[in-house]
Image (cartoon, rainbow, N blue to C red; front, side, top):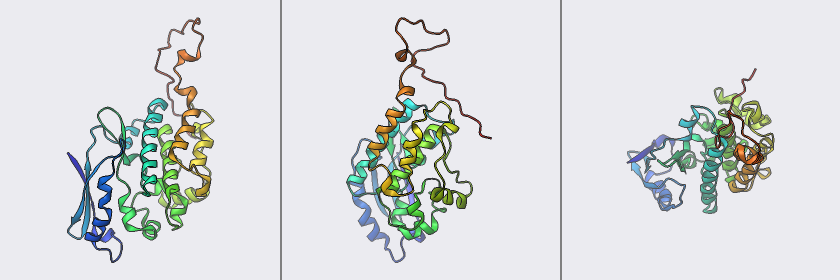
Length: 271
């Protein structure tokens, strides 16, 4: 079973011929990575393009977040897999440009896959990203320099991954996109909120990590996704550790303790 995404002709670059664009993008079908959804076909349809890729049986991260934040043990495993896939793209001089929960899919075993590839925005070019970002639904995860119309780089993907980390662990966006104009201004000017204001069971060491990933200046961000997820794992070490591992072996467990469940994650209500 495959999924198909159609890019209408009006969203292609001005003067761009669908056949030429399809030929240019077709090498994407040869990408092979354990955590990248294989693209099966890129071709023309009417005056536009279409992309076909394997359907994943486990849904998307966006689906899972509808039930609340993802527990850290599951989150760090998923984010590490996505991070490796993102670094693989960057090593091959490719930009994703649409890293967000809707672009992270799961198979039947729970393994995570990077999908979507932000091809719409890649095809349209940076000037149209700045003008039509709201239409493309990227406002929630868009990097400040992209808003300013600067040429995109892999640092824009790192920024979006930082937003996704925040969203995964808190269940909320750092800058809500219900009002696109306010969201754009927040990405450009506001400090990243403290994740513990949204999920009190998260460690305080998490905030500087997400702040670095979402730095306003691209060069102030992590250079690779692996560096980000490595720091994330260290910050979450206490939460990842089973309760019995941090207690004396001779100490009796409290009656309500259940090995392996870790902490219960409670979301703090904001005023």
